[in-house]
Amino acid sequence: MTDPFALFDTWFTEARETEINDSNAMALATADASGMPSLRMVLLKGHDRQGFVFYTNLGSNKASDLKANPQAALLFHWKSLRRQIRVAGQVSSVDDAAADAYFASRSRDSQLGAWASLQSEPLDSRDTFMARYDEVRARYDGQDVPRPPHWSGFRIAPQRFEFWEDREHRLHHRRVFLPDGDAWTEGLLYP
Image (tube, rainbow, N blue to C red):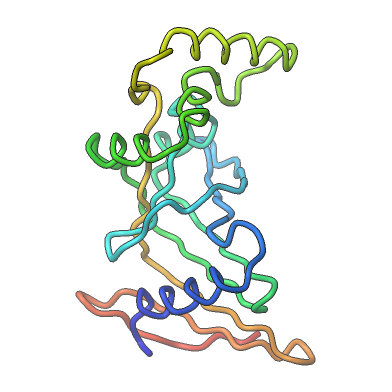
């Protein structure tokens, strides 16, 4: 198979059947304007041929990094399958309609939490956060919770894929895919 998107779909489907928790978890690597890298786990919330989508507070460190340096890398690791996929590419913001639709699909508590959280800012105590949450819950009692203006999503458009499969004696199988016009070329990498 020389279509990395189709191969991703095959592996992701298998991971959803075998991984106990969060088969959509992915490590997101960013770098700030000075080049300092940062890595954290986020959840994949959509993917297609235009890229891989996740959502976050726009005041978060990851969002600040992506505004300063709109390139990122992802790593999916599925231990039960002994596989991983690396993706690197350009980052863009999702449109308001996509962010609104995904926000509306979240649980009410998650929606309220998006309003209450000052993500990545120092927090003096858990009680402070819970008090903010209670204020927001009271504000939207009996109403739909709108998407906060400081909350949206990002799409990473792949410019490189690597599919890694564990093999005995560390003789792993690594396939790399690079764009070539409207198609992708496939090659192998030494383990």
